Length: 277
Image (cartoon, rainbow, N blue to C red; front, side, top):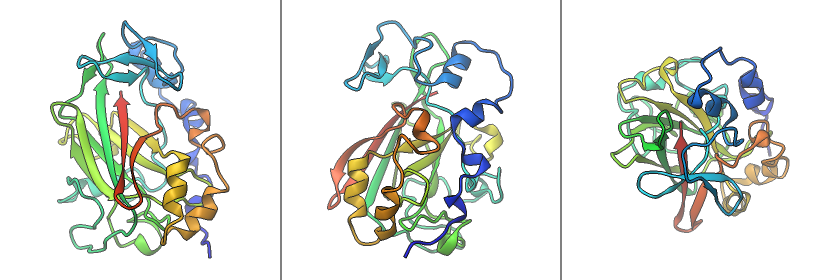
């Protein structure tokens, strides 16, 4: 039986990029500023030698020869359950939040989130210069709901837990990863992971220091495979009521936020996303 969530209704903080554009503070519209506002709309080139990938998304090539989608990853809402001090509790100040495996709670909480295994892999790029550069030493805070659609620290049976939240630092190659579980689908939203990018671990203590907030989306075929398994019963029906094109966040474009997936239900999935900022 499906449960009503507070986040079943679109929150003011969950209205998407078009709403956020109206509240962005005035700033200099240099190359970074224009790309930051318009994301992957192609209003500016990241670097010379741009092309396109198989989906038609404009791409450029970093110093190591890897194709990166053109434009900064879109700024999105953190939603009503960020846990970064901007709306209630701040998990970023707690000892133990810097960790790769986020399936279990830490500190005084002891719960473990059940679900299909998922590895999240992010590669962070810096677009502030003339060339695309790998952003080493940056920090990413990632969080998402559990298999029942609850957010730890705020919601339902997960209110006294802090699992499915953690911070990691990018290596010299710009990569970082989290071990977690595939999130559920709650009514009104496409399955997603929230994340914030910070300049460094030292800065990753408050939302006021963040460089970018965005969301990762999952492909429909993978969601359908996961939600056919035990523990995701409500997600299967909720997924049928929303699409990437109707979702309040991704409906204005998701090409830069759709994860590349590998793996299986039996072995677990790996979701990979480039994060140019």
